[in-house]
Image (cartoon, rainbow, N blue to C red; front, side):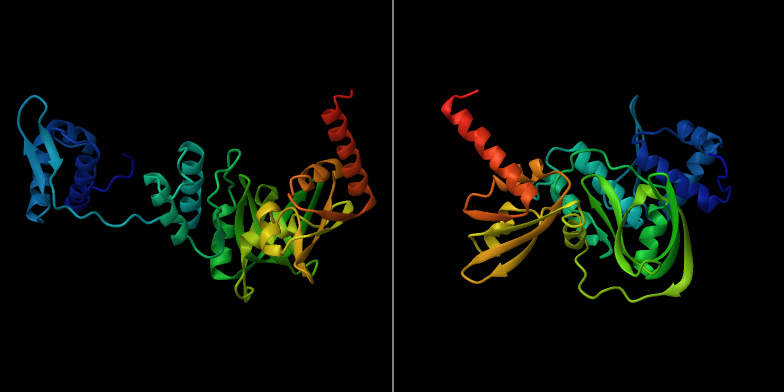
Length: 309
């Protein structure tokens, strides 16, 4: 182990770590791992025992040192980035990770609840692999400490510089996003973390929005700003409509008569029409492109039901 301390206390702690990790390790094996003789390794075990740590010796061909019962280990400490990364690794590798009744899912829920408020990680299982990014730790730190950032951001072939107030880091569909207020553009922005090429933390601080629901804000952001505007009036109250329509698909406005207005935009009217077709109650559509796409979808469905080609 390069850089290993040679003080007796440090060596004793390293010995404890090895005994915990390698149940049944012998004195000679322990000494080899520490870079000392087997006799010296036994002295470090004696130091641990003098400190009332239950290090047991087991004789026989499979014997060696092991940690006995009664040892209380210190709590694990993770940075926000490490904890968020651990959540994603678990989601991707364990089929029951999103189920609170599952052992792993229950443990995962505890980690999520312990994350800082400025880190939003939804528990539904993601579709792909979340890619870590070199600047994630600094962005998370700035969100937690409410420090202003000066960052470089790449969009296509264009590289821009902006000063932002980082509100939260959000993980959505296996991709990290920074929810922030851009002082350079005087507007709320949602930036892809993998497109941030450089970050500088400024000494200035800011006050983030009170009661910020970062995940909800980001998902609602994705429903706006596309080429084709859409308005849909649904014959059901918002609490029902939200069960059928995710926030990333539309903003909801309550209307008289237990109705709901969906306000959205889309780059693909045909795709949006297919999403609307899943709504199980009556609705009307404003917006020529989506309405035409919905009519064409209806014609195809009728033709399929009639057996026409």
